Image 1 (cartoon, each protein chain N blue to C red):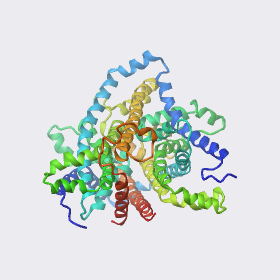
Image 2: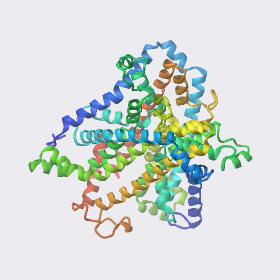
Image 3: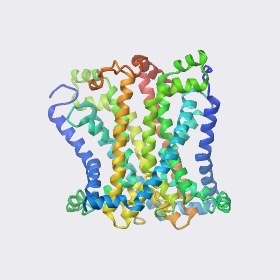
Image 4: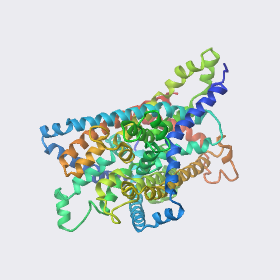
Length: 273
Length: 314
């Protein structure tokens, strides 16, 4: 790579590294030091305690289900927004960003109010015998809300760029619409869908604000891992909170690696096309 | 069976209905609920809830946190984007991943690391409290936690913009004898302005609304360390639902404003970057080409391909 004549490399990189070290590296290393200091046995005891295991099950289960719902429904929303023209399309397109812009606590109380058994959506569900708020389903609903824009926004640009001629060729050659979708469109969208899925799962795993209100927070039943960390902190069990936080951070890193991988795959696709 | 790629009329109606139904259940009903609940006890009650001294104190604190966080993180974002988009150096990818970390780390974990580092039980925290400096359960803690959660926004927005723009104009400025600051203020910043504004809007929205991280470090002292989102939680947990939703409706309005601002910026950016493009007939009004005479729609597209490729390989 040719050496640039552009100035400012030293100061900009210096400031970036300094700021990141202060804000991220130092605190994070503090966390891992604290974890290392508590000893393996104690650490293991904390992170595989029944209550912790129950919280992982709920956090992962709900985050993955919400991610899957968002893959299917997000693809549908992106498809409808890109391919069809209907009144209000622009407004609806803009509103897809609401979960990014709305404070999570507001989302939490609004969803709780809507899906509680006395709420406008909770009542009909209750009549069907489905308990939405204060159950694992409620957690999934909140996480679906939080992750909704990720898949839509990942898929939308790819769908817009997609060459319609290829689809038309497939259709002219006698493929059914479903075949065209499955064999031509879906493979092209795969990297974007996976990126969106991974992003929404990553966000959902750590999500706190929107979930605490709707989940009901019953230990072993509707307690997500971030809430368990919070509970331990409130009980001054710093070591326990730290151990769980370390586990969550490891998963955050892993998802980050996965997201990078999917995005690079997408870039390669884009470059090859 | 119609042969249009979009599908037949019936398919189209079913798909649109399904998408709108989903968005209705997950977006529009909760949104409507916020305002319905906020005004449940009438407008007088609503105004009283918002004008309550504790609500106003929370608003002031939130604005203060935003006023500190946004400028600092904007400067960081510009510096980081410049270093990463314009130069190649060992550890560049790692740095990029570090910048993404707050996107995937739990806000609760973000708050926790600062409690561990600066709280009363840590050596640093003990030293600070010996010198009567309060960080955790006080304003500085809230600011630091908010900074952690929001620092990627500007950098993440600017890096692709810088990469697409290419460095020709900047190199020309330097070759013609401009110094670094002249180049930055006359070339880089004008080219970046929409991307920068876009990033700041997102940063601002998140800084105002952050809940989890702030909740860990704030200590929930009423009228003192309660930001607006935390105030919503307190009112809600006291079963003061109308009050909670009244304050929440203010935050919701700010969120809607964010979305509108975002769209406006997007439209201006489109106008500036691609005046000749056929997209968006509505934006092709008079004077659309004024803002960016370089008019490099085709040039830009070429640039993005190369950069995409480079990004993929590096």
